Length: 99
Image (cartoon, rainbow, N blue to C red; front, top):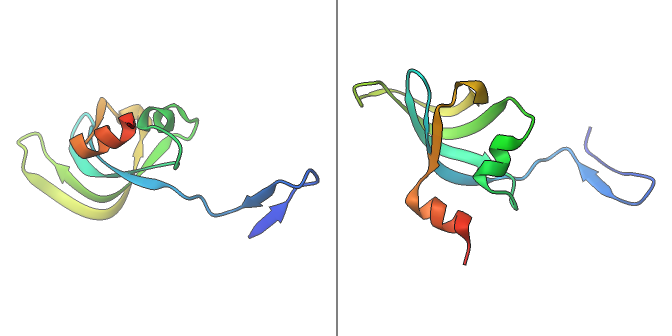
């Protein structure tokens, strides 16, 4: 469906722009390190509070309980119900906090 303008003049597009935030995500079985994708003006916590059940992560490394890399994938979709904790990397956390 490309783009359209509603009767009030607001412009809509099917493309969703997001920014990548380096993060670590702990699930019951793996630690996932990669880039979490967040709407441009939102914080990571805002993304977690959205109704969508999954989070998009790119350039992901999956680590087993022993800390060894189990797999790498360019994209993984993580069900929020399986997230135990999530932490942005230090550089990403500084960006999240702002000036």
